[in-house]
Amino acid sequence: MQTRRAVLRRAAGAGAAAIAGCAGWTGATSPVTILAAGSLTTALEKGLEPAVDPPIRVGTRGSAAVARLVAAGTRSPNIVSLADPALFDGPLHPDWYASFATNAMVLAYTTDTAGGRAVRDADPDRWWEPILAGTTRFGRTDPDLDPLGYRTLFTLALAADHYPSAPALRDRIPARDQVYPETQLLAQFETGGIDAALTYRNMAVERGYDFLALPAAIDLSDPRHAERYHRTSYTLPGGKTVHGDVIRYAATILEDGDRDAVRSVFDTHVDGAYLGQYGFGQPTDYPRYIGDVPPRLRA
View 1 (cartoon, rainbow, N blue to C red):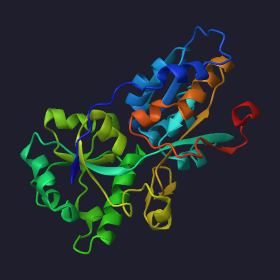
View 2 (spheres, rainbow, N blue to C red):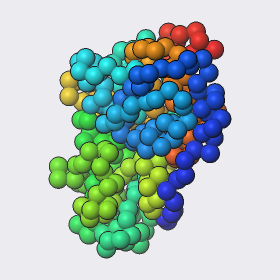
View 3 (cartoon, helix red, strand yellow):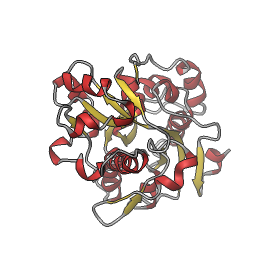
């Protein structure tokens, strides 16, 4: 049922990625700024940063919040990297972007608490029972601020249809006092705030937490179930409705700044070996470029 993952080491290919990533860079003095999804925090700070020569400055928060900040002109980073390319179809509207990684939803838990052990010991096909019984304190993120929040709701809705004995989990499990910022969700395991959470696989892997891998029909990872995923939806503040889909991460260059430095960092960001080291999937046809891509990047 459970899989133990040790906290992952720095990307093994960092040296090679750095050489490839900084081709053409002539020595920028200002850092390349990246505003990114909270679930990318560790990968960017510990994997990307040592793999590139240009200095970088990383800021992270929920992707929906990132998109609204950038669309409003409140933030203008060189690179924007989001956990859902749907946000590049509003509120952001860049000319192009690159899909560069995938992920999956899992049920992470801590074995340091009775509530976490209740998840560990539950029937894998009835993992929600200790949560509904109040034995396990469940945490999640805000669907208005980040895709992990609304993907948690999608997973609960899909689970209710997938398991014959499951009740309406999307209606019964969520409560406002469960909500934490994406960057702090699994830190609640250490503080004793929660016992379990539906989260991205990479977040559980990089922190070394046990997790239950969910069936492909509900974990938002398998293109063969994309039509099923799409039946779920959530409406964000501002009126945009997002639908369930295979989890994809996407990035674009917003401000070129020092062009060579920005583009060398971007190249390594979307095509670096560090991504796999930090629990992300890298399909063979990724990075996949969409839109009016600059010729150098497309090449």
